[in-house]
Length: 282
Image (cartoon, rainbow, N blue to C red; front, side, top):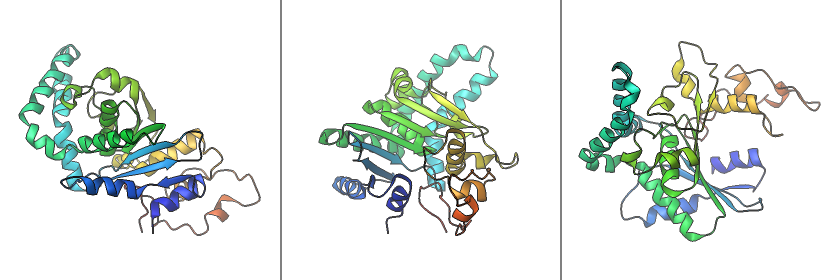
């Protein structure tokens, strides 16, 4: 059963958003080697234009965490050095160049974990088909960082959730700060460490994190951030998620009809929630 399609139908309406898993699998099978990156391609055909969104999975296992550190460790180290030396901000242009030189030394190792190259090539493949009037890319955590880089490489827009940034590392990634500023947007939860890797670009939005102070890592949860966005911006007439109130402590929304929120969530199972892979757990 395609869990992703089930959730898309529940949220957008039946058939309005399509999980194009065959397009992704056929593309991966056409490659000469294997690819470790996990991504989805969602299309919306009910709009006046045919829109496609590439969604890149976030960090989900120790290997992904190592990948995060390997790609962004030069930027993290540079930020630390800049913070402790006098007039550190003056050295920012020099640090970008140093990160680029480090990337040349580590080029073979970085190539092995450069998920952003694989996502970039997939986007270029989609662009070459000319089947879509608009393409965008998104992702959470590692996936958000990859989305930022791939968007700047291909000229499409990206929305990242808790994604590491690319301003200091732009030369190493082969992109420009102008393209990052023009094309990318990062959602940054309070007390979330990951979206503070590398320097934040021009377009971003800080959001609250209501997790307990001693559970700051929970601020990196994509579910918690989704609930914060829903409760801050509304659901555009779609139902609020039971998880937000039942598991994360958000206030129950006021009903617009005769059925209460508690009635709507009678079958809610606290062990059946979205995890950070974008599928259901439990």
